[in-house]
Length: 323
Image (cartoon, rainbow, N blue to C red; front, side, top):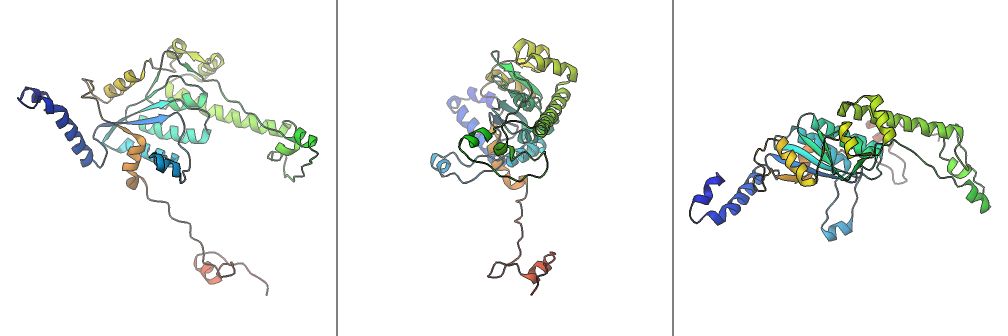
């Protein structure tokens, strides 16, 4: 419709205004989510598992950060939402908890199975960063970047020598040789059991990561081990090995995601609308999942002891007290 407007006298300067108005009407009609939009996700850090009250964020207008649970729920919903056409993310993680990255990756992989998705980065600094990016349909990297698929390592702090110098002797009771929390105060290095536990944990983590990357990128496990031995991999090696699909910059990646969702004539005016995942999660939060119910607690007497009759009614067996 808009291609005919410039030929109408007096309306040539109003085309942009009319286009913007039509976009706002369409967004309002779809409950704050424009139809055919591409979700954007900044993954330089993993969303926190919990969020709290931050008065500074209120003052600066930053708002409450999106929690990991909300991000995962929003991605799963977007996979089934006809208003969402694709997902693009900058994936350049710093050090992050593996469990949170794994949970986020599973949601992105589920989205990528049904809709176009693209990950881009200046560089992939570590193994978990690339592990997360490999869940996307296409993986892009800038020409100056590298893929740091180097595996995992761990370190530990031991305070035994410092405590000895201060004349402090730690007395801690531990049950079992693999209970290593007390080693921080009682040892000056890894015990055999502690080293075995940490080594097995790292081996298990790498095995899961290698398996997921090999499946998503269609690379043999033995070949992946060989690539890891040569890492970090520069752009030519990364593309030839199949770890990276294309070398390009941010604007080229955004043009590519528009192409993947079916936009043929890509321009600033005809580019698909983009929406940050946090905005999408906020617009759809009431439909993402019901709020978690509160944990019921039995009423208590004034002295702090639980009410026997109420505890029995709730299904708990009251404890027997003498006297």
